[in-house]
Length: 608
Image (cartoon, rainbow, N blue to C red; front, side, top):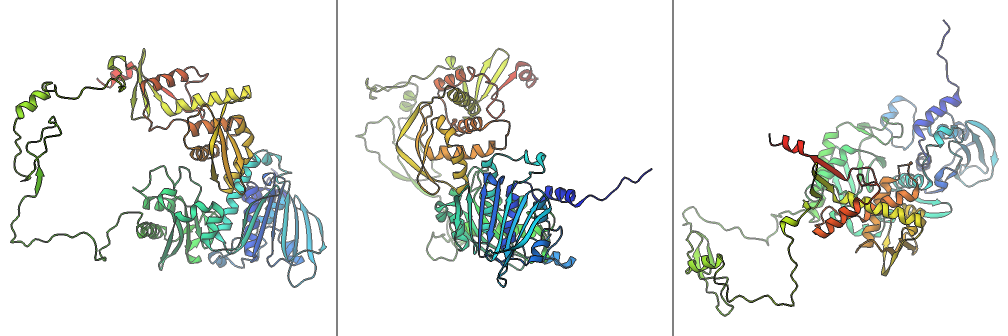
């Protein structure tokens, strides 16, 4: 039988390796920015087109490369960071495997221009699918300039899995933020289709956070600063009022390298326990400084997961550091035993007599007396019985007698007639579910999901007709967005306008909400837009629905009645009627059930 095992050609091996390192355009941005940081760049410029699918360009003013180094950098496992195995346990640079450039060159068209400060001419290298097309001297600025075009052009199966340009841009922004936060001393910029998203000067970490996430966060940051023999912790956490319903502003860095850690995230959330609701996420930007020998950054191809030698101890130190910061800034209640002013704790000798505390009560108080009768007080001890006089009269009044002197209700006062219990068809449970009897048993309706489906089908109908009645805002509210949210909103602005949401740009990442759908009863347009953006992000990954349908789903989820809202019988009846007038009343826009029937058989089983 012939041998069946053979070595793969380099081109195929590089494409396989690229699948681990380069998952989407954002992966290329991450690897190239990290290379620029390792090259000691003071300025890094990132430009993308079509969400990075058409072009990614990263320019830095770092040390640059010689002609030989430039050519060798595209070979697999070619690196200047590692000389022996022990070097893996003393890594302080961002990249070290030597796989990034080889993987990128295997699935794209790459152009590199680079020059060292000591040389007059630089080097131009053009590579397409791992094949070197051009290598020649060229005049260029000091540093390196990478241009990546037509990502996955030779791997169509991978390219078709790329998402929309707006979603790919969102991932690029996320990777840019991670590198920018890790190295605030480096000036960085990001452009999309020629427009600046970020233009960040070199600064301190707090100013970098504010420049990225907006000025509104400036007054919401609490500083962390803990020094121990195991690990040093610095950075900032957000005050409880800055927490949001969605995650996205939570960052861990170890030796300036971004890290994902659900384990340490639980430590931070544990510190915020009983301060925040369980579904709220506070922003935090936490920097851990550890001995490189006590961590392993080589456990994941993208180097975003890091193994600590003693992660339990780090967990406890992190928890204590966050709690200390919350207590120091009076976010959690605390008692300071060092201050002289405060409450006095009375001291009683053992021989001192103990008496019951005294309180003032009116033993003759009658709630039905006229205002002319002034109450008289006397001091009694709490242990003494209180026997008011005329208690028989009070008892008679309790039975319905003695009310002749009460003031009659004025005819002009409108009193809402209570609905008799016999006429109540619906009952609201915990301001969340609506219960009603049906022929087969008990019907339970989720009030929020039901309203979402009603609004969703209404928005779809409005889109089909091409006209939605909108209500102009008398005083348009301005909202400052993060660059990522602003780019997302700008991409779907036309679809929102079809639904009656009119938004104008005021410069930078600030918008004004000029009009909302007339059918919505919204008091806070800012909250609506924030909830809409959050809902749209959750629905972005669903490629089966088009952009307009995702917008309709997100707007319906953002504007539906909350679970905490108490509804009148009329409102409940209207909600039920509209729900069952929908084409698909049994499910919400995201496919979750709106109605559940508890059958009589199941109810009877519970009483056996």
